[in-house]
Image (cartoon, rainbow, N blue to C red; front, side, top):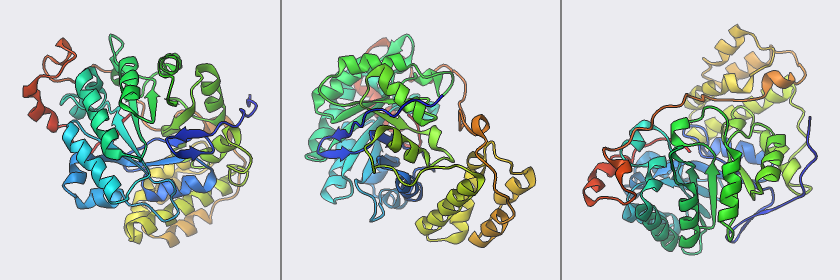
Length: 386
């Protein structure tokens, strides 16, 4: 059943007004400039970069400096930072602001990857209350007039929840908004997101927007999440894999008239055109046809999920090296209507619940011991999550 569109509710992030209250969640290797441009073509929203490691930015790592670049069509420009050291994160924020590289900065405290959490980073970090507060306070100060937001999880596991304390601390520190992925680190992406936690956070954090994340696979899901939790907007990650037009559907459902692009009719021809456009933008992003076509290969299964595209053709698309090859292969397809449920639902790997890897003695205190600083800096590696 399709729900009626929700009343238009623009999202205000500091001075930035987003006509449709929708945010693209950072995903490593996915939300590069090419994908952000493609999603933006379908509808209004806030489109965030891949997660950037603060230390790599401070050290001006060549790959990192490329990842923080935005196309001239991208407004507002949004960058997500990850780190564990307050001084390093503040320095990274200072670089983004002083060099006019971002209009919005987000801090990631949601990564559940073991090699991050076992160093005290990601979703493990908010357990250390003073460290979390110090990072957000310094980052907000360094950001100045550029709005800074926080994305987090419910906590480490069901016995070690942190989201209410962290939400209030972020609000007190001057964050412009907080976003909650309604799972714990131990749940990874498995099971069902606990939307009730988003409602709890909305009740606890009252002066800034609260955004909900988790299990947004369709516009109906977004409308339902906002209705059930009272949240001010939604953050969409895996639901848009191979479905960049989801942002058009979200804008039509949640934004004012004119915030969405052309109506979406997800026939096989429509999907093929989106896939081809994505490949073209990747080639432009990498400035290398071979590299761009190699990158689109990982998107094949997501785009054609549920559509009558044979295994041989899927395999061939997963081996392409040129845009001409893509054109030739897509040219063999006959159009087909949207397959409905077969193309919907979960996308990407969910993983399974697992005990969160943590530093020795991490849960014994909610304060950070001085000697753990060097160990935690090892968490500043390239990873996605949240």
